[in-house]
Image 1 (cartoon, rainbow over the protein chains, first blue to last red):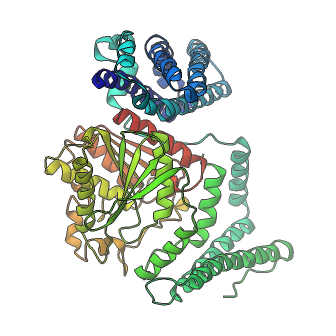
Image 2: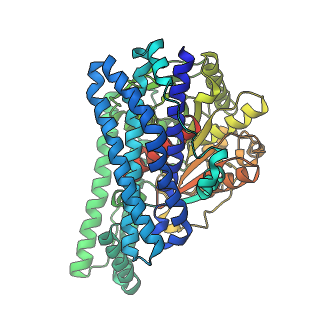
Image 3: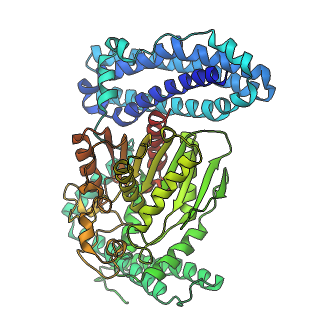
Length: 287
Length: 301
């Protein structure tokens, strides 16, 4: 009878595997919506439709049946089971709102800012889905073997699932998503959401560096003092005794030396920079 | 755009860490790294159980939940050193995110044990998992930096020995070609990763040379430079690499060649990230681990 349970649970985990494939696509490519929406909008529409519909029809009903049974048999898990089952509704609602945003973005010319918001929402959705899947597997799936007996698994198998639409026979419904999932993305560039303030500061700094020899000189001071810090730290390591195990005092000394050398180098750098900026003194290094 | 934390780290560290790993006495470097590693706090939310192999230390890092997914992990350290505590913390994050147990293998190090000692330990670790009754389809192999090299070499060796293929494999900032003279021309040299400055062509105590026991001809061997190997029949692969490391092209080239050989290989280039940024606490570290967990979950349901 463990076989039935095994099949049932394997089915749920395979669903999670397919969701993870789609989530990984969202994680990598959501940002492409901002600058090349036409290239990715159609596949994202399919992806969210797949997640929302397939979960509601196929995956969540099976999970909820299993969670309810688990909660009956292991009262300490009742709250977790209720919370995670309750999240299914939220996943559906957020998914539907993203579907609406995607449809809107596909039908009308939307601004870059609104596509950026859409990409952020997609990324958040993917992160929440991931956390949800991880918690289900960690907190509930891992407990079913301890709690269920043969008759429990028999009860569960009565609810036979429909076929997963990402399987080959059903692939016509999601052609682009299927193509993506089977071919993979090859190479993808992943970047974090940029802070507009940081971006502005960087642009201004680059512009200032290109115009001002003084700033360029300051940048070179930073580099030179970094090298000095590295040289000092090398000296500190070279001075270690040749014994195989470090005495605790040596350990402490290396730590203090490293931090001290680094602080010392940066303190000298700040001092020199300060003199250069305020008193126009030519930078020098006193090694 | 990289996060503020990542940018600050890269900028500050580049001032102090470059040249640290070049021309250095291996024993002293090891002791210094070990000292720093001891300062890292131990992971608290996993059970760590030693499980030594014939020639090296290994341990199980398990989240305190039942799971049947196993990650066989080879930590990096330029083949000559290790940071057990930092790696324990990193694999604990991966273990939680992917709901998997991790078998962390501290393979033998060069120069005392040159090639193929480390690879033999990695293969023994895989065989040990199979002997323990773990099905190959429940195993994902992974590693960072030199460990990434060993991950790919292990895959090639397993295929050549007709061993069961694991469900998937991932590498973080892998070194795939020891003889490479790549200069990383496709990225901005100013942003070069401070943790791993590009080495000069030859220098004393070059870890690559120590790994092959001074025999440079071995650079051409596919188990030393997996990029030189035939990649047919490998399992699905995910290669994550930082956009600011000189190893960047080694991962992208490997993925390209693997795909050309019919392997489902994907490479993620993380903008502005240094070597094995997963070990840090940048926002990108968490995100990259999330992507890894997706890969592990869909390779090994």
